[in-house]
Amino acid sequence: MEIQDIATKRLYSQQLSRTNLHQPVDVVSWLGAVQAQDYSGAKWSLGLRLPPITDPGIEQDITDKAIFRTWLLRGTLHFVSAGDIHWMLALVAGRIISGNKRRYLELELDEKTLMRSNDLLSKALQGANQMDRKSLLAVLENEGISTKGQRGVYMLQRASLDGLICQGTMYAKIPGFTRLEKVPSKSIHRDEAIAKLASRYFTSRGPATLQDFTWWSGLSAAEAKAGLDSIKSHFIHETMADQTYWFSPLRQLENDPAQSILLLPGFDEYLLSYKDRSASLDVPNYNRLIPTNGMLPATIVINGRVVGTWKRTFKKGAVYIVLSPFNPISTAEYNGATTAASRLGDFLGMPAILI
Image (cartoon, rainbow, N blue to C red; front, side, top):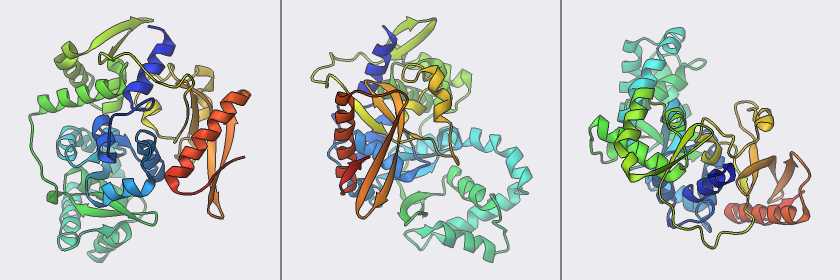
């Protein structure tokens, strides 16, 4: 297996070179969890894997509570399906809460205050389908609990990690929250949950290493290894440069385009799912993807390799896209990028103009 084979197989397993899924929630379930700090970018991640779905189609699954947004793997915001949210939270929340202890102390959030805020937030949502973040923080302020600085965010996160609330639809750019108890749950044993997460990861993201899974999941090294050990008989593996890559047996890649050109959002799972991203990104270009104001740049991907970045702006009912390739691209590649831009325009329901 060559390094290009890793990139090609990852495009395939991540549903980027083909898809057999039908609804946005199917994509989220397939991937297990989808990075979602950037709400609009996360929706585009789903759209890329499910043409010809549109932005409103994804919003409908969120409105219907088939998809939720909450703090999950590594304590970051993810999309997760209603069928997975409870067992995933039960698996990862304790480790995240433990890792937050120092930050809780810095913010003067003792356990008594956090339990009180949990109770107030849950009760506030008891008679409401959903409330926006500003309104929920006002509830805490009215009860004498300061939400200054990052205190409010950490209290909302803690209530989410404790399985009381989660994010639903957005109010403009302000997240809405709902009670999680309304979502049916089925508890599973921790070992089973670890195995399930490992299976989901290597099926949807292989070829990948144990180190990749450990980083993505946020599990301890011992738990991640136990997870892989419990499911690896269902996978195949190959070794390259002293690294062992695990993946599902893939049928022959058929009818894939000779040249695949994608405009990925900044936090797409294609890059963020792996600790080692060298299969898709040349090491000298790592520093070109440094976050700005907490946001990763969107990337141009050709045949599985990151070849540049891109930005979008909205003006007069159209989306304008500016490409910034690391090196000059060919006319054929530019034409492919134009097609990729049109796909984004179709997703958003407006003309896309490459400039």
